[in-house]
Image (cartoon, rainbow over the protein chains, first blue to last red):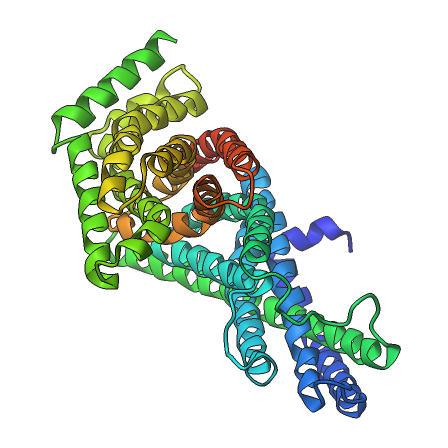
Length: 244
Length: 222
């Protein structure tokens, strides 16, 4: 089957239905492997077992950024080709991205409490992840506010692309700002290299998280397509009842 | 070019003649600056230290409040449809509208800033620095706001959503605006570095804003 055939929502639904069980199984296996590796990974010589929160914190941060990039690609699909499947992909990715970003923030502040003595510091990274989270919420709010799906898709696509241009600038400004305000008070991870005994579980967990995202996203896209079909059917029914 | 000039003159006339025009923005700015000492106490030394930040936050909020009239008013009375079908490229039209909007809402804030600086115990040099950074930075706020205004134009209750969408994007402008003001007042940074970045941000939004707003309007209203 050529890739272009996937653009047909019905074909997409059929394929998603077929591969979702396999993806779910792969996700579970990846988590079983990654989590067990994370548990047996050696403790950090300074932070002890607390450093293990990294194995769910860092992949969530990566995914938070990756999902915005994915939404930007989908936004191009929406604006250039006006493809409904791109709309669906962008819409369903936003809440998942917001959830991963929130997870990153929560685990980060739980990690910060024993290490820095406070749940929150206005460090460059923390602040830019917080802004990323706010932008996710903005996109979701825009999706929710505009009733008609295709119009909402195009408005959200514009916002997503503007965000994609601005997020690196925000990141840069926030880093600049935080170095200006608090010079090197914050403990940085790792240094030049991470020891393989930590790196391997981290990569395993990153793969598990990526699989989890793909699974959730496919399932959410399938639900959204069905939701739209139900909406269309209801509208047709209402039209018929009105005698048109 | 004629059409753009006519549009700008029309927008500025409307802004000046309807609803108090620029004065309302300045009044809001004044009220925000008046409220801050009530919240943090009338400590002149503290006010002097955070004065530039207060002025910037006040200007940011004041320019935000005016945004919902930037395009929505034209949408309500139907002139936006004429603008959309006109032969002038929409990007230029919305840019002209944003410039007119800045001249009637942003520029008065810049002019008022040194006066309000007196209330915050800023010396003339500091007030001048804040006014200069506002002059360079408020166009960026307007042009970022233009995108939000275009996205929310057809919504019934777009005002709050507009703020939610626009404010995160204004963070860099706020950072470098306040940093440049502080650099001029207390150092240790040279004033030029953050100020140049602030100007660069403004120039960039001047390009991105009209294009994104035009795309949003074309797609949003068909």
